[in-house]
Image (cartoon, rainbow, N blue to C red; front, side, top):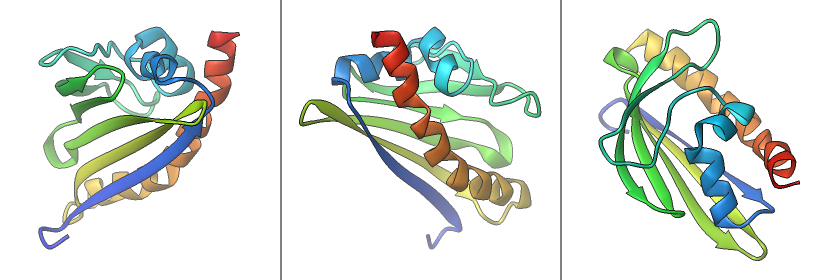
Length: 139
């Protein structure tokens, strides 16, 4: 981190095939069940917003890269808290290993440092909510 930027990396095993996990991260209705409302679509260049909570304004996003059922990357936020979020899906046994990387937190910005600290703690909690949402969806 020689440039003062930080990265968060998490992974979660989900007992569903990549096609189901892909829907969880690219279908707005399903994504809202376990993370946050937003009009995400797996189309490069698609612009959308995500509302993390009532305490946050809508965060602007732009889809940067898509490999169907394998990876989606988009920018998240703007200004001093603009980061890049990458979701990568890897088949593992009868399920999927989901890797999440959020990079670009400018630790020289107090606001970005606070966001980094919150999300570094928060992402594992958010990812744990995906499995129950997928069971409900697939059930």
